Amino acid sequence: MGYVTAVPPPRSEAPASARAGRMSLAVALLCGALGVAVALLSTRQRWSEGTAMVPGGAFPLTAKGSDVTGVPAALAIVGLAALVAVFAVRRAGRFMVAGLLALSGAGTVAAALLGASDSSALDEKAAQASGDTSATVQALTHTSWPYVAAVGGALILLAGLLALRYGRLWPGMSGRYERSGAPRPRGRKAPAADPDRPEELWKALDRGEDPTGA
Image 1 (cartoon, rainbow, N blue to C red):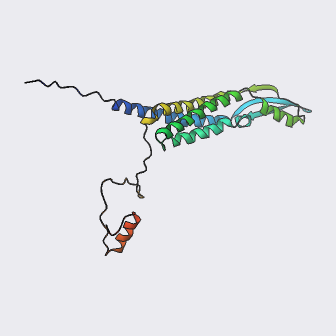
Image 2: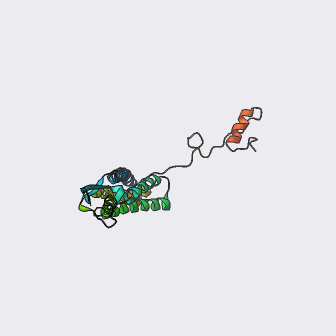
Image 3: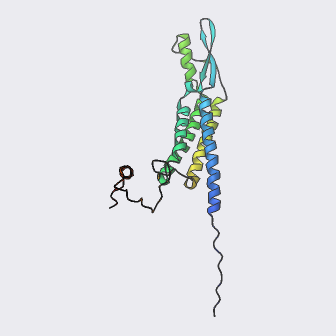
């Protein structure tokens, strides 16, 4: 008579994966939304200032982030759209959208850092103020807002990286819904419509069923 040795069941990794998915989803949503808000807000602030020499003396000039470059704001909006769209797609589509989200963040960082030392916007304003096309801005200084925009881009980038790494664990939108919004039950066939009740016939036709039950 032989002995049967009980083998303990393998430890399931599902709970750990579920926790990682929930945690990464929360962090990605927070970082993505905050990054977009910071990037958009920063582009509306003063990035640089200086003066232009005019006949009456020094004329003060200022340039907002949107005057310097429109790239950070545009990419932040793209990142917001990608953050929303990542839940509407699955598998390869989700991976591609997550990559777009990460690229939007990286592009925002690069554009903001390049704009931190840019003087072309104020040079153009100096030429307009002085009436001399060769005039350039004087006493040029920059604020910290371009670097704040770069931080916003970094948050968007982090959200994209999290989506690339953990996006497969995140929930998605389901398309199995009836017109009322309730999930359609599987494996159950609606009863045939009563031919003596016209309203039942119309309801069956509306559901795409054969009212005769054939």
